[in-house]
Length: 162
Image (tube, rainbow, N blue to C red; front, side, top):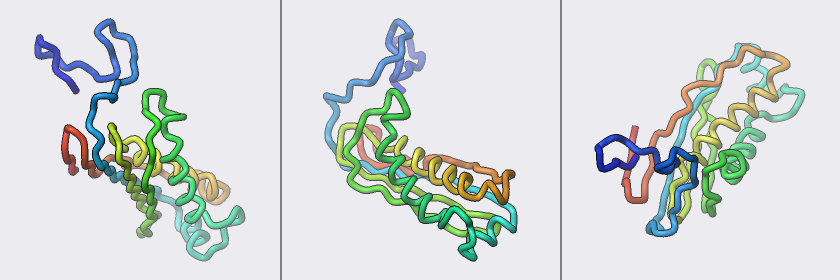
């Protein structure tokens, strides 16, 4: 967030008149950038059992979620109006089993003038929603939570680690 001369914070996507605007990244340096995001989905023992036994009627929700998350990272600028379209060099989604569901981690990389935080967050979100969609016939009470940026590297602001 930039600071105005008066010292009050200025949002980067709002101009001096209060209008929403896309940030001009044309003068920013091209650097290697990476973002890691995480989230989780919790579910009933029955839903978890069906996933782990491979008995979900719609197919394998974990592989489908992985592919959906990667696709989501690549399509982020189509869904979030002020995101720049970016050449994604790598997008990876991991689903880590837990006692009550899965932790989801997305790692997205690019070499460009702006970061890939939104792409990583979108990958986690869509992967979780895909699992929900495929298993909702068994458990409509699943909870998607804790979607957050864990780390980002590259660019003027440097490294952020949660």
